[in-house]
Amino acid sequence: MNDRGDVGWIAGLARPDILALAACEQDEWDPTLARLHANELPWRGADDDTLAGLNRYPQPWSRELERRLAALYQVPADCVLAGRGSDDAIDLLVRGFCRAGQDAVLVCPPTFSMYAMAARIQGAQVCAAPLRAQAGFALDRAAVLHACTPAVKLLFLCSPNNPTGNLVPEADLLFLAEALIGRALIVVDEAYVEFAARASIARLLTRYPQLVVLRTLSKAFGLAGTRCGVLLAHPRIVALLRNVLPPYAIGQHTIETVLRRLQPGPLAQARTQVQRLLTARAALARALAALPRVRAVYPSEANFLLLRLADAGAALALAREHGLLVRDARGFPGLSQCLRVTVGSADDNSRLLAAWA
Ligand SMILES: *Cc1c(COP(=O)(O)O)cnc(C)c1O
View 1 (cartoon, rainbow, N blue to C red):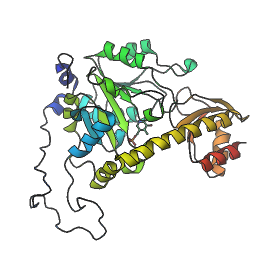
View 2 (view 1 turned 90 degrees about the vertical axis):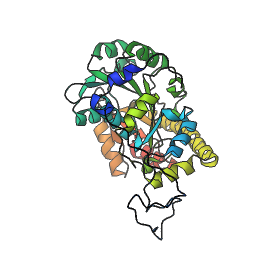
View 3 (view 1 turned 135 degrees about the horizontal axis):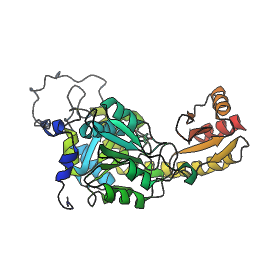
View 4 (view 1 turned 180 degrees about the vertical axis):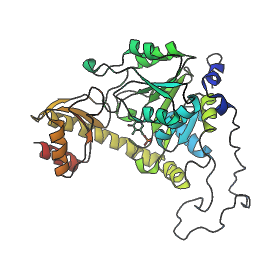
């Protein structure tokens, strides 16, 4: 891929002990050779419906899967790292770039809690530049720059943001990418971008080596149970993080399921389902906004709606009595009396509206 200038600073940001690790050697992996080198059992289970056989280890990392994901996300193949959900990617980033007790991540709350969680597990500090609640949860560029001390190695931006549902404008992402080049990586979590009226920022990866994009098959592709998330970044970053990911991280079932679901037929079906969901989201938002107990339905670019209620606790309890779980968002800074509702099936959505009527 085209580097825009020298990217030696990537190694400068990374943890020195991770740089020093040799990548797990990709064993010769040729399904036509008899495998007497890996201490596997030679027999397949009678109920084993996989192509490769679950008695065999998968490839330490599946080149075929990553090639297919590269085509899906329209990036070069060496920019792709597949993991066990994007939660895995968040954890890898923090472990690869933050030294315990020294380095920090920067988050913009209210946002996805895994960024801070992964940082705390690693012993990294968590700095915060809150979104501007009074301005539709807009990013506060000045606050981000101010909070981005030399200790900060990763800036996590979630777009569309969970739980507020709004996008970070591309101009803000690129402004911060320019401002922080060489100082920190800009990690843009696009778990919900398929539901948004905007293209992925991944198309700009080749121009901005400081950009890391997280995608997942858990939301729009309906594969939350299979655990597959993707980190898209400069090949230097991908190579470095591959040293941190355990070999065989992605099981054979997941590899084969994902490859099947990325065939043209299932892909077209996934796109149709996204359209259906967008229609349902609009209808649900209108119906919820008409309920007296609902004070606000925030605009959403994702597959959920953030609501402010007259009494969130009472609404939560009422939903539960009707056998419905919704997410209590009151614990997020600035979201008192707020709940997050996933757009469900037509039946579930009607039940929620009936429970709160
Ligand atoms: C759901 C979600 C993810 C996806 O996590 P996976 O581990 O890929 O299932 C990532 N980021 C955000 C903001 C999410 O809401």
